[in-house]
Length: 260
Image 1 (cartoon, rainbow, N blue to C red):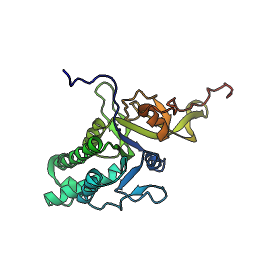
Image 2: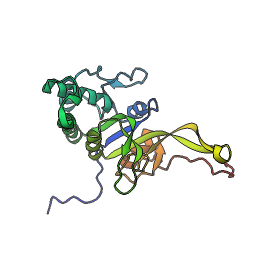
Image 3: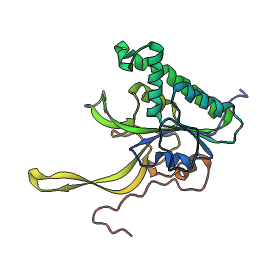
Image 4: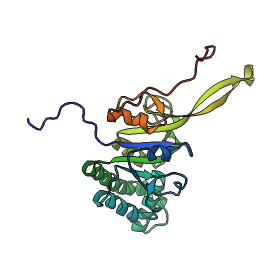
């Protein structure tokens, strides 16, 4: 009975942020407390951050995780940038072990099942880093539009991290937060009658969606608003007790209303 834990005790976060190209996912992660980036794709040259050289093989990636776990350093966050390019390294490792040229050459889609064993190794290592080194774990991914077979409705398209569906399910279940970074878009009807059509209009405002909706995969364990600004401090305020605002991202005024 003395082992019972009560109350809230938020620990270092396990978060994945995914979204369209160039929206600022890596810049968002660079705002985390003293981060070290493990880069599997070349795209950090314009961001002021500390990072390992570009990883070229799965074993090399795991050796980077081992150093983060065992090394003498003061980093407080580890960032994997990006998951979709890490998946390429995993597929290459599976193909080498199975002596095939492509993951698709392994019959009955078993190649993707074999790949899950490597994903589990990655997540287990990240769990150790989080638990024993007290570090935040931030995963970055591009976004893909996939067909979702909802048993309660007709199938529809939605955004999810750009990795195979088995890996996406495993990683998103493991994470505390699944955050979808996007631009706010408004649709305006143009034309008349049969010629009427929707026209997408955007102001360039970048937001993060934190709650699952038909259009995207998302979740959070921090009671975040459905939308927040793409700003690490806004996210951090929800678990650190800081005074930064966690209010929803500003929404445009309704049509016909004056913006005061």
